[in-house]
Length: 224
Length: 220
Image (cartoon, rainbow over all chains, first blue to last red):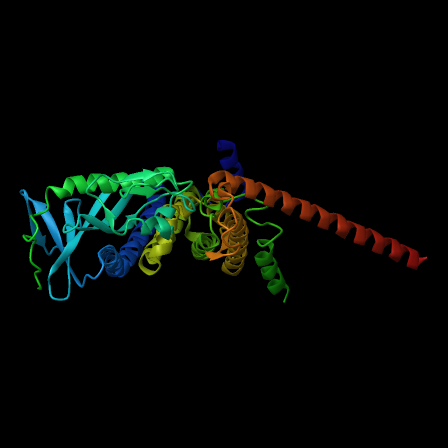
């Protein structure tokens, strides 16, 4: 290392070793400019990113709950379910869907759990009137592209969650072995991911089923 | 005129003769990680293109003011800034693609091909050559990513850009989508590339030889 530096020194006589304050100065200037650029791009894209996320979530709720025209967020706090207006989302929130007249239809419940590679975030629609799941949507996952990602790309698999009774715990079975109403054909080559989705739904359902109010006592739609 | 030809040379060399993937074997992390479909490969190529051209331009313009002792850190600051810009722009404009590439966009910072071009080329040449070189290199990188991504998507999923090619009876080679498929395809492509280059060299030698003989014969 020192040999090399010596060589450079002798080969270019005009270049002197710059002082450390100069080195620090150039690093500081570069860091400062880069910081300003990063803040600028963050501010520029912030609204669009937030909008995208909110839209994705809204679309997912409308997808898992058919015939829904309005939705609102419900938050479970102090042992009761209340309507919240705040933006953002946490694990203690679900969504309630209403039809055009503001009549309650069903809930969209979210659940998170480990998949094959990373946490899978699932949203599913639930009708308390007949205890059916009305649809399932993967909000976030990092499953293997081409295999595990079939949990949201394979429409046959996604379709199995439409009108699926959940009064009994649902089970994932090997493809083609489905005999019971509460069984789901797992995806060939993505058994772990399929089972993970089913497990997440079961756990989320068990967590929420006792928290949901009696039928007829659902929170009213707050139109503001 | 002479300078124009050499600027063109600088650009064209990245496509084949000095291809960053097939010849220099640089930037292997994104190469293997995101090439499980053609569209991912193209978007990764475009992101790398933007970052490399931008950084080469800046490094080359500011080369007099970049002290040798801290040059690597300064290159990284410049590259990282561009990568952050790409990251947020993709998140805002193409959220679905960002979902697929998510984890790999920040890793462009550590793509040794980009840092390598700054150190080996942009810091020693003027802006025009640096940008030409960056355009050529990232285009070469994109071609390589695209080749790998197409092969893996066609064999592993039976589709190209998401369009089904072979119908329902095709049994996809699942392994091509998984990491081993990436290594396999890359190895085979490298083999093909080197075989082709070798053949071409032999052919050129033969042509040169025969024309020399013809020339000597004619001289007699």
